[in-house]
Length: 131
Image (cartoon, rainbow, N blue to C red):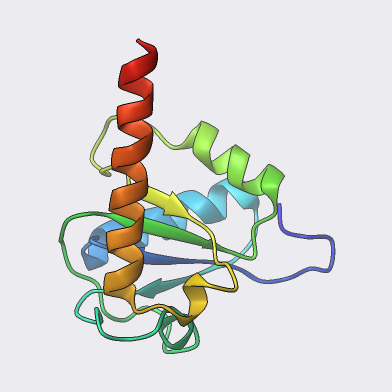
């Protein structure tokens, strides 16, 4: 599910408590058949995204809104597989999804979340206009 070079798989989560983060980890590992690192961003709004994912795995979880999941090391097929398999209902709230880019790696987590919310609002409005 990752690029052919055997890159490690991981996710950065925001808005999930520790138990939910563990559930996400187990879901992704079962789906991919590989170990998945999980980084938390709760309480780290002023930190750069790159610093969070280069930090300690398994830290900084806490329930908050919005929920966000950044794919790390997943290729397009892997991301599509996760999006298709993640239940839309159940005990795990569905997050806003994103992937690292050259730009957003330098942003603070707070700025990334603002950007993702603006993007979601835009697409929601576009969808409403088509209906």
